[in-house]
Image 1 (tube, rainbow, N blue to C red):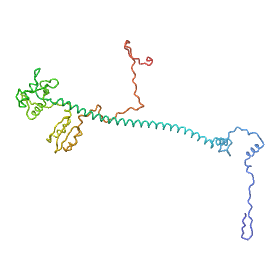
Image 2 (image 1 turned 60 degrees about the horizontal axis):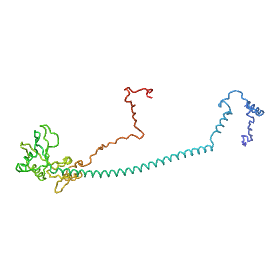
Image 3 (image 1 turned 30 degrees about the vertical axis):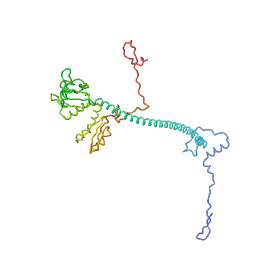
Image 4 (image 1 turned 90 degrees about the vertical axis):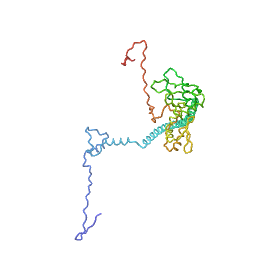
Length: 368
């Protein structure tokens, strides 16, 4: 729409009409127009002139080959149905794998459950065996105590005399020698009767003249005579005719001697404090401290006694306990893995006895 403007003189001015271009731009592309005209009149496909196709950067429009390749690419792209089919195949494969895995897990679970049940059974059996071994240990300890008591009862009339020199002759009359020594100790006549069931040296080889003499072990027929001799030797200085000091001990079993040796730290404390104690049979130790009696027959009875004495607890092994054949060192032996098997050693080839000795073949060809 044109706008009317007033001039200085008041006259009306008309606007200049706009010129439009109605010319066709196809005149600028003569080749393209010719080709289009030829294509309209000819129904044959255009022949290739053998010239190479121009590059896309130089051509005014996209070539037909490029359009075809784009169409092929678009046509080869998967459709929605293809994607759904692919998803169905993947779901089927995964469902199959999950089913196998679930079966494996169930199988492993059943095996683990079986192993746990077997472990529980083994734990129960081991616990029962431990309780049984503990009971057997107590029974065995009691049997050893009873056996030691029987052994000491068989030795109750025996005396062991130490320090009496041995005769250089082939034989010696030990009963007559003991009567000549014991009767003066008991303040009896030399010819007073003293009945011995047996009297001999300790059963071991005779030593050299410079070595210590063997002990004399004698069994008196009456227990009263044995006790009188033992008490008299403790209250007097017992010597032989040559002035050699003699010691008299009760003949005890080896187990009792080892137990008394184990209790030596405790008896040493009692002796240092001048506290009297007494041995009992089967092996036991009895003492009185501040009017309270203490009886020791096992290592468990030592703790109350040390508490009454005001000393540190003593570590004394059980003298009647079952000795361990394989002591526990606290080290766990490393076990070989299950998948490792020891290499089997090959047996050497056997040679007949009548064949001459010759070196074994070393080449592979001669080993067949």
